[in-house]
Amino acid sequence: MDKKKINELKKIATRVRKHIIEETYHAGAGHPGGSLSCTDILTVLYFHEMRVDPKNPHWKDRDRFVLSKGHCAPALYGVLAERGFFPVEDLVGFRSADSYLEGHPSMKMVPGVDMSTGSLGQGISAAVGMAMMGKLDKADYRVYAILGDGEIQEGQVWEALMAAAHYKLDNLVAFLDYNGLQIDGKITEVMSPEPVEEKFRAFGWKVLKIDAHDYEQIIDALNQAREIKGMPVMIIAKSIKGKGVSFMENSVSWHGTPPKKEHRDQAIAELDEYLAKLEVE
Image 1 (tube, one colour):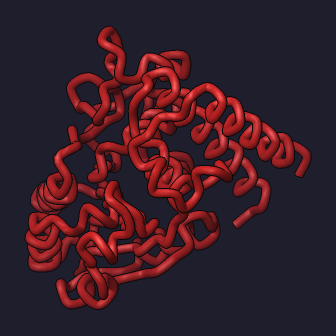
Image 2: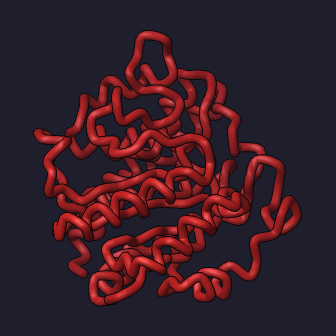
């Protein structure tokens, strides 16, 4: 892919990361770690891959997206604001009583949100339903979802995956945000879902593996997914929890801990420095 385009995507993602820090800082609550780990995937989806119209969020022919790991709403809100679904200035109201930006995505409240999520395991089931409806309607829209790696400890996830394969939903692409950490520690120590690759294949999905922060790999996987027929696609995206903020990276303590002022200031300074480098490339 054109390096200039990738550079622009990186700039957007860096601004989104700044939004995540500001949202959780001003709210005094939220989940920065997992939001930062899925930012690059979300950026590629909304600024390269998906067919959406910010001026018409309910356009019937749009591609659909479900953030199954709904607690990472700060990332989704940041991307939707950058894409023009609502004003960037509204982000600092995240989780406040007078804001429409609730702690988890609400399809009734937030323009651009296709499914309300938050109860882990349910989002992927909704995505399967959307993909089934697309097939029944003979529509050409595609459905995308992001799952958390801790989330796949939920049994409902595997029921949904089984149904998607049974109905040959090749219009469905899911990403596993595989950062290896959940609220209580390493996923392999809390309740190991391994071997995930073999399990997804056994459940009838085409499996691709990528670096969740490599834009060329994300885009190539999405291009491959479009060519796969007769089965849904799972993209295992190896990610870094807290990606982009040095002291948050690979640290479980930032799963659901908002930054205090000193953390906020350091994080914004790091992201601004990286953004400045991108501006001269």
